[in-house]
Length: 477
Image (cartoon, rainbow, N blue to C red; front, side, top):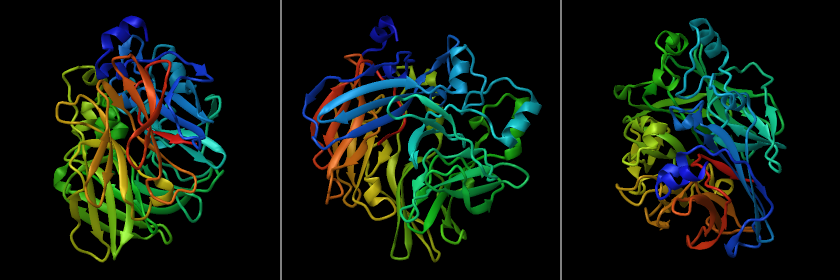
């Protein structure tokens, strides 16, 4: 970003939605106060850092070109690096075009090309949503089943991972779960075709072949950005934002982008589909009121019931609210969801719901390794201080039993997703640190903050050499 753009955006959230061209590698950046001596490893985040292509803004934040940002920790020192993923989508963008089927970006293509691409799988490798480790491979992911491998040390792109199976599928999630017992990663794909299905699958560590666990016929598949996992079940929560697969295949006639084909049908309500991960059998659907969500928080079984916690919205209007030109408008105020619990009676009956906290929030995380699939005490998220907040302006820790909330914030600063890192030999669930990349709009650059996960007091921070655009998710490796 040029100095004029920084100056124009300083003091507002807009700086987080400006394209970043600069790639850097710094062995040591400035650290204030003191980070825990035991903190060793690398926090890698993926951000949509290029939001303008060919001199024009992309339509939606979700289509920004993926950049990796890494903070490495060793003996109290911190290094930093940033690098774009060298994908086909990136190469086209650098050439001034975005001729790939994106979330809300739709290139002009013939009807024939649209039909063949949607039913064989669109080839957008812009993996800008999340990261994970599959065996010894580190991969970036998006909502298409096309993970891209990268080197966590150099941030160089290794290449596209091609699945060596016949599972198919055109739409998936970038939020796979880890099966504690088998070491597999569990996910699902929506396979569009004459017989459209949700296909739940597992991937063994190091494998490039997906094992089908279950196939569920569906007439109008829902848009599901994530799902829940308990010790026994994969919980697919079908919000009433649904699509007719043939509408996607023929939408070239009207020029609709992928997400524009989905319709909000609140009269359908929300359906909970529970897949037994051992037998592949389906339990449900269990029905609830209409709502929408991007992010599950946790799921677990208790006393003959399945508990599903997620960040819920009344409707999917947030999708439109996250268009780039809206986000660059200083008067625009997105409305954020609330942490909500749904309790599903496994032997039948009404699904119950309750709010666990009143604070507006999203991008939730937990102590995943210790508490996913089982009862837990705390959720962390990016949140807002009040209705006048123009973006996430605080980090929150929620006690899910009491609803108590503690926060961290700083004037003019916009924190991102809080990533929990457990302390060695931790006994308490919240014994560790929370790491978040924060944009300091007044200073015109970002920093990484480390909080004590128990008290939420600041332990230290490390200054990045430039402003890092707002992103979605990351992992500590």
